[in-house]
Amino acid sequence: MIENIRKTLAKYWGYDNFLPLQEEAMACIARRRDSVVVLPTGGGKSLCFQAPAVAMSGLAVVVSPLISLMKDQVDALAQCGVPAGRIDSSISSEQRMTVLNGIRNNKFKLLYLAPERLVSDDFLQVLRKINLSFVAIDEAHCVSMWGHDFRPEYRQLGSLKRLFPGVTIAAYTATATEQVRRDIAEQLGLDKPKMLIGSFDRPNLVYKVRQRGSILKQVRDVLDRHSSESGIVYCIKRKDVDRMCAQLAHKGYSVAPYHAGMEDVDRKKSQEMFINEKVDTIVATIAFGMGIDKSNVRYVIHAGMPKSLEHYQQESGRAGRDGLEAECDLFYSGGDYGTWKFLMKDMQPEAQKIAMVKLSEMYSYCTGGICRHKTILRYFGQNLDNANCEACDVCLGELSHIDDALVTGQKILSCIARLDQRSGSNYTALVLTGSREKRIIENNHDTLSTYGLLSDYSKDTVHNWIEQLVGQDYIEKTGEYNVLTITEKGRRVLNGQETPRLLKPVKRPTRISRVAADSWDGVDHGLFEALRKLRKTLAGKKGVPAYVVFGDAALRDMARRRPSTPTGFLEVKGVGEMKSKQYGKTVLTAIKAYCTANSLETDVID
Ligand code: ADP
Image 1 (cartoon, protein in one colour):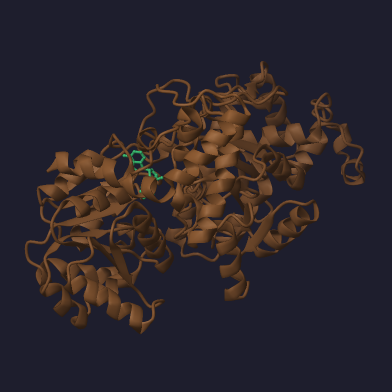
Image 2 (cartoon, helix red, strand yellow):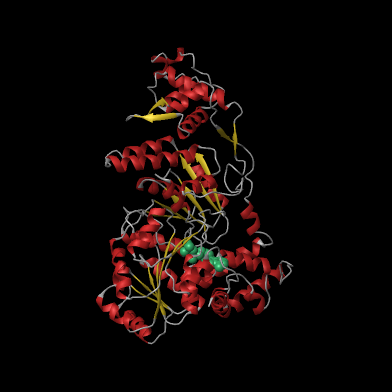
């Protein structure tokens, strides 16, 4: 059976190999064993159930929480030549009848449904009459209260095993915690499920963290590196979204806003323009993202700090689903920490305690100078084997450790002590840099022995070091005004028993990550751009998103191999028989024209 599946993968999707754990996940379905598959975003979960569904007899039912997700997947399957249908509240009764007839006549291999519909009495009668191959449950963490997106309607899926005794269930999620995994198996009543847990590392994502300065400029710098590519800018508040969006539009960037305060139609319009590549960048609150399957998001910028690493991993994880390099930039400030802390003040004590721990860990991620990949993985209980990830600001050498971190740390901590542990980080930085601000003079703080001790540095640099010391637990921010107090650990620094890590940005050209270098290897950039334009035209004609026609990875492979024949075209990763039939002629003509005009060799074989 697995050989059949492998052939299906090549024929319909144009892929020769499995991604990690895909083969094992597919084998479970083929052997009719229940499974819980945990893979990160972009790990290729959809294919784990789509390929077996095509290779096996009967119809597979896929449960999905969002109409947009179902629509996207059914459209993408149609492009690959796989007959799939969906029934949801957005389709007309006529369309619904057509799908129901299709089910009865065995026309589909996959059927996408919302959970409540699957277990409705009417539908159960339909399903009882057909050959149900298996049930796949996408976004399975929605069944668990421990997850970040509990949906009560998912709970009804607990009756599936009773309603269809012996049916194989495969559950998929990108949510990593052990508790959620166990809960999924329990709530769905799975029978000795195989737990397949992938690595949570996303080596193609380049993580960068900087303290927020002139945020418009910082965001523009990233956008300028990705001219006419798709990306997301997340802001914490709606009004920040509106402001940022207006400023970027004013500067000529192609942007659209998205937040929960907008009218439904406007929000939908923004989303569609982004998906169909009519705008490059969406500026949004975290209301945007769930249900967006766009595979070629090349950058995700956070203009403010998220409240936990789970949130950060999820939001930044929307970049680079296609496995190609993508950039995740986070611009934080000590103020973000204060904002979240303020918003958490009315929580129940127990929940507040947990939220605060998560917030501190997020803050440590920002201020700590440790490999970002390693920090995120460790948070999810996994390890990174490589000493250098070659895909974060720390490992790419964009930050450097200062030489005299112990002495600098001691100067900062002594100043906090001299200020009787009653000042915030901004004020402390002013004193350390010898500011002549009125309030400092009035408070006589210009007479302290620590006044001006770090006057060789800018206030922002010193402020940043203070935040780094907070992130490493040498200083704590207490009370309503986030007053700095020295912790036990901080005392060890004062006594010279422990050295903190203090970083400063290095001014040098940004080095390219290893993944970026690899994925552009041999690719003709001009041809890639030409094919991108062609893809957009083809997608417009079909009324589907551009990435559904071909992913960026497929376009790069075309611009690398530059095939001149249909056989050569089928060799391209991500080109299956159906896509070759539909687009082969047009694309081959475009490749030929470009290669002739630019005297480029064709049919490059690796
Ligand atoms: P997930 O649902 O886990 O986020 P997807 O199913 O959307 O991931 O897959 C992510 C990307 O990887 C898609 O562009 C998909 O076409 C691609 N992909 C999936 N399986 C393979 C494979 N075996 N080889 C190459 N690319 C693959």
